[in-house]
Image (tube, rainbow, N blue to C red; front, side):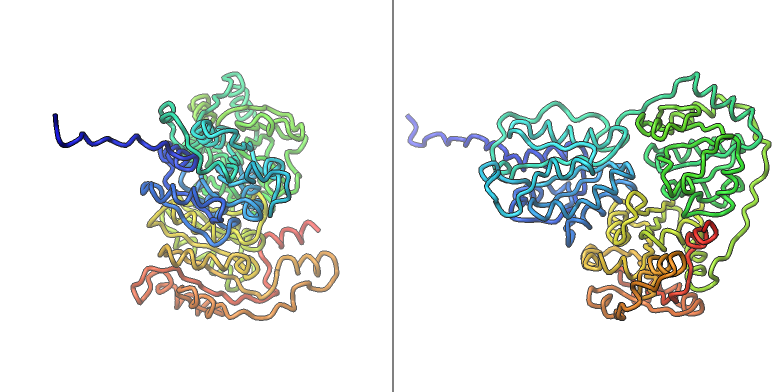
Length: 559
């Protein structure tokens, strides 16, 4: 008989709900989560600390964490994931979820919710998250039991990545996160991981033939590429279609970058944030092929097209979008990339003989911002990303910056028109495309809503550059009040902000330029800092309140 008893191996401890949820994210290939913590969501954070393959980006507020995840999803081609605590934390994420819903961005929002034992007892911050987030998400789920954790996480990722892609809420009752999950991992994760789209719908061949016949029979055809071109990974197929057939291509603001805007067949951006020549070309066409666009008010030039004489070929993977507004025409439910591939085959040997594209180089207000946009056109490398805030900044980015070749992208909050998007979105884009040149364009109104995230960019050591168009007011709002309504400015009483001091306090480099000569003389140092340190840079461009963005000039012409 041995005097030394055999050591007893302790039984493995069952993972908690939080640990099982994070494990399922890791198995699906999620590598970044963006969030802001609270007491009720801390178990998720502890679980994430145990998974070094997942990098948690700690933001300074839930709204900006959501914007970071939304932009990350657009650039990376993978589902974005963000988190927030219940109470007031999760509702603060609403603007980002609405942006993801309206822009069809695949996003999973992990939120701690009211503990079951506290439900309907007036606990602090109690809210029905399923009802609250229903209108701004594709799907909402509240975890029913610990044993469903893996299934629900995998299901949320799949739902977000399946057309029509969009945001999904997965709510964990706060008192469930530390509960044990018995049983091992579920079935192996699907081969798609967290990439999107998960599935592709292929077009009816008869409808592809009908679309090709419409092109052959038309005198003037134009392709309008929406954000769905990027979502489906159809950029190369669209460019090949235009190159082989000679068809001219305009893009919506969200579709910008789908074609090389230096290409002879590129019309630039159409709609309210675009070019007059592009709008005119679309209006004069008798066949319009729309790829992955909701044809909202901005994209369709105030719903002024399609016109009765035009044959509309409307392509979307979302059946609901195809019948919205009863536009008629040739309606094709299909993944955009799959349709472009099929139309290329159907039009093999065809060459478009319609009018050439004559795109003049307009100059708007010939001051600092116009010069900046022209310089950004040359400064963005092949993989560069331009992020523009809503309002004036989107107007300049859409019309005055040309995206040439490569995988250059423009990100704007076109789904909401929300100020305060540019900085957190630039952070998300920088995380998604490390090493790429990421440039943000925004006004002082928008940066004031998100300046706290300057700390996040500095902490992460991101070399992004933020060009601040500082007119010390809400420029477009004041323009509407004075020029369209005959009233007085509403924000002219804003006091000055010392943005150079703000930048320094967050550890950013900064420049202040008041004219084009100062911008040009600072340009090399902006992108190649003399001190050699990698950190974010603020470039404050002092612009007059009288400066008009291209989109407002279009508005004035219409009115």
